[in-house]
Amino acid sequence: RYEKLWLMLGVSMLVGFFVVLLYGQFVQGFMPAHGFQTIDPTKVDQTPPFNQPGVFKKGDNEYEAVLVAMAFGYQPNVIEVPAGATVHFKITTKDVVHGFQIPKTNVNAMVIPGYVSETSYTFKKPGEYLILCNEYCGVGHQMMMAKVKVT
Ligand code: CUA
Image 1 (cartoon, rainbow, N blue to C red):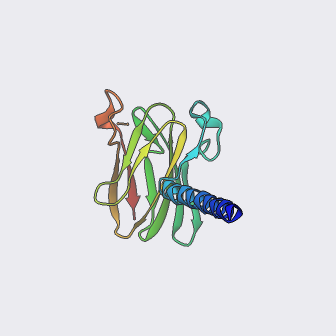
Image 2: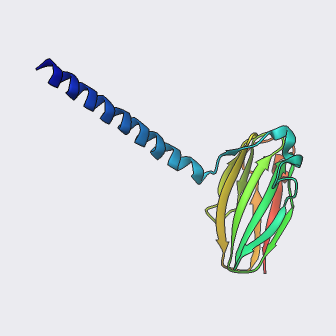
């Protein structure tokens, strides 16, 4: 009789572990939405792909934009892509927390020292899209911006 009880206990503990494990995976599943890959913030210049910030064609209408944020600007400062391009942004910071927001789009990421933020957007209409820092980062915060030129 007791054996049955112990077996039940063992099985329920196993199930419990699985639930915890699955829950952990589930929660982690949310994090890549913000793409938290880590990076040594003091070695941004030497760490690929950030040793070469810029825009790179990855496929038909698909681009990767690698950006470094620092007080008080982004490198590169201008990103040019054709209309209809899907741009996968990878951003990190060399100093403090910065923001990465493109008004009138759903692009709004926080750029935290030690991490790589990822976000994507398809620029359907030609025009100039401002990239703004929306995290207070010091005296030059108001001037911290870049732009996406969609042609
Ligand atoms: Cu960078 Cu505010």
